[in-house]
Structures are given as C-alpha cells and as structure tokens.
Image (cartoon, rainbow, N blue to C red):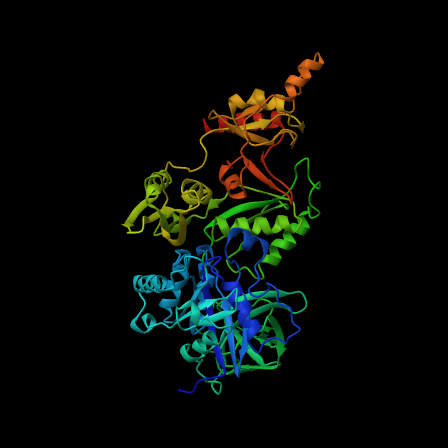
Length: 613
C-alpha cells in the first residue's frame, strides 16, 4: 500500500504543567520550521487566560513542524470530559499520539480519558518522559507506571511496545537513555522517533475525494471554515464539490480558499491531497462530521460523534439598577449576535429564542462548558444575567428521563469516605472502588448530571486540592422523583440600595451567612447572603449607626465582623433557586432575585402559593 512519507500526523497528550507547550516550543525552535529572526515566546499551543487559570485545554490547536524533508502536524487535545466529542474527532485525524509525562509526578488521571480514546482508535503511542533534570525525578519508575496504565486502558500488544524518549524541554535536551548524563541539546531523538514509529498516511490521492470536517473555525473575511483531514483524493481551490450533510442531503459549493499549517501559521495553499490536515472555506453552513466529495461520486464517511447537550440555562440581558456601570456591551442585540457567533465554532452549543426578546435558552455539554462561555463573555465586556442550570429531560421508551454520568475519582485514601457520603446525597451510586498501594483510592460512580452541578468546588475543598475527578456522559435514565439538589435554606435579600455597612452586617450576621464586604454597592432585591432558615429574609444591609459622640464613633470603627464568603462562578450557579438570577459583569458577580422590588416579589409569592393550593 502506497504511503506519503513526507507527513506524520500526531496528537499530543499531557497533564497540565507536564511541559507540553514548552516541548512544542522547543521542537519549533530546533526544527527547520522558523527562521532565526522569529520570536515564538510562549505561543505554541497558546492557551487563553481561562485555559491557564483552569488548567485545561478547551479548543484544539494545530502546529506544524518541519524536520528535514518531513512535515509533522501536531494537534493539541482537550483534557476535560466536557469536550470528549472533540477528543474523539481529533483522534480520527491522526495516526499516532505523543504522551508527555512528568518524570517526577508520573502518570495523572486526567490523561486517562484521552489515552483511552487513542487506544480505541488503534493509534500508535510514543512516550516522552519530560523534566528528567527535576530534583527527585524517577524516569525508570514512571515508564513502569505508563506501562501499567496502558495495560489497564486496554492497549494492544503493538501499543504496549512503545518507544520512550527522555527529555528536558525547558533546557532543550533529549535522549533515548534515562541516564541524565546522556542528555544532549537536541530534539532529534523525538523527531526521529516520530518519523520512524508513527505510520505515514495512506496515499490514495488518485481516488475520489473524501474530506471530513472535524473542527470549525470562523473568520470574518472568509466566514465559517471547516478543518479536517483529506482521507482520500485531492482537493484544489476552485473545485466544485458536494458536502454530504448530516441529514443525508447533499449541497454543492465551490472551494474558495484552502489553508495549510506551517509552524504557528495557517497559510493559503492551492491544493491538498490524502493525508493533509487543512482548512476549507466556501460553504457557510458546513458542520462537523460532514464529508466533502466530488459532485459525481458522493461517498460519506461514518458520522463523527457530537456530544448531546445535557444542561441548559437562560441568558438574559442585564436589567439590574447597576446596568452599564462595568461593561460596555449591554444591549440585547449585542448579546444575541455574540451568542450566534459562538455557534460558528462551538458544535455542542445550542441557542434558542424565547418569547421574550431579551432572553435566550443556551444549552451545552455540562457545567464547565457553559461556565467557560459565561467567563468568556464577561472578559469581552458583556453584562448579562443567567438562570440556574437545569438538565435537559427526554422521553426514552415512553419514560421521562434525565442524563446520568460516569464519575471517576482518584483521591488520597483519607478523603474517600466523605466523598462517598457527599455523592450519595447527590444520588450518586458507587459502582467500583479500588485501593492502591500508594495511598490512593479510585472511586467510580453513576450520578445524575443535576447532582454534579456545583460539586467541583465542593470536591476540591473536601480533598484539599489533592483529588482528581473526571466525568463523562453515560446515558439517560428515568428521572429521580421527589429530589431536587441545591440549597435548602432561603436567601438574605436587601430591601434598599446603598453601600453595605459594618454596623448593618453585624446586625444581620445572626440570621445567616454573609456574602458581601462592608462598602460593597448593594441594590434592592440583591442577595447578600444565605438565610439560616428555609424562607427568604428581607434585610437592611446599608443601615448606618446614629453616632452620639466621638468615643462611640471610634468604638464602631473597631467593631469586628465575620469574614464574608465569596462564591465562585460555579458556586454561585449552584446556589441559585428558580426565582433567582446571577448578574455577571466584567468586574462583578452578583446574586439577585428575578423580581427586584420587595413588594412585587412578595405579591408574586402569595399568588403562587394560592395557585398551588
């Protein structure tokens, strides 16, 4: 079988901080890709701020490295299960994977999900043991850990016979030997191993075209761009082709532009053939999983999996008294345009209009997926409000059903009991428990998706940051009745507008937990804490003390209050009840009631109570 020996397509897999970006930077520097004047800094596989802060890869990125007469296409992989569909699509585009592992920390559970997908696609693995110069490095032990992990994940005999390279990406050195003294300032062992080990793409360029879209991008000049692999044949700019739509229909279009990858750039090219990873423009509504073929020889590839949305929430234009103070994008038109723009590249997102012109139902793959969208919007200057996340219910075999997820947790032994209790309260059912020799326990649960809303932050707190949790969509099961996760207590709700005072907070502390600091700007209907009772309590948090003399004034200034609790975005989303919203601006996150006016809210509550009788 003829192959293209000039190309290798690989995906790179690594736990955060194991040196993936540094390694690719060094490969770019030492290869024939960039001229000597190019400054790459830290741009290869560049992460945006949210990715850096959360320690995850959200969107796959392509980098192409030239080595001698070969091109090595490197695809980054998302590590979180909310992006599992994208991982599977990336694995379809490559012929092998490079696993980067820290020589001190060893294998980490976050890489399990991606590795398992690689083995299911029968991809060829290469292992890079990075940071071999780190104090306490144990490269030989880590190789044994990798072998154990591969066996556990079901690797076949060929995959278990993986080559190992030992490297210090920070220093630009590598070697085929674990002895630190053998390290040399070269990435050639990595390049050569990729060329020698990863299979070259099959060259069937003389057969009819088959190109499958695996990812989407959007460019305001050329519109939507389909990124994928040419599996068969050749494609040129100007070709008349047809796209096999997901619904079985066909749509003809002309290829207006082709883009290839070189170093960190996407450059225009005139032609691509079997084995190439390219981007195609020319059809505005092209979608992931669709196949581009010759008009006279339509032949669709198997459809790629796209994760179904499991959670949805309302996105609403901000109508609080503080609207426009902190953001410059506050209108319904701007929010709608931005949400619709997101649909061009985010294949698992759904945006639906409602009867209200300032409200949209946004559905996504999970809490992380939606919270990242919210965080992105606020950093772009948007102000908006969102409702409590709710699961998407379906009819399955005539029964109303809700999504369940498989949850895998790796934790130090001492925290396993409290984790089991916490997930049991969220209707999680433990399906497996394995205790290792290293003081670590692996727990597996089947848990309803709504039981996991807000659990990430609780889990990190319970395990003091040492626990690692991954969860993937499993199936729809009949809805659990008479159970609603979330808070049991009411809220402390402000009855007026002004600044929170120490004096007022002292008077309210006994009624619940406070969320705001003295001096915080407050408005009527804003939630300033959690009530210690089941019902909401209206409070005056802006009241000042009537001072009678200087001594009294001095005494009040030294009055102490408990440290308020500041909720994260995820914690705030979990806190919300049905009649509440979360106001989000570039600078603030504020909990509030949907109806801000105290009298109007109380009337609505009485009306609802009558209707339920």
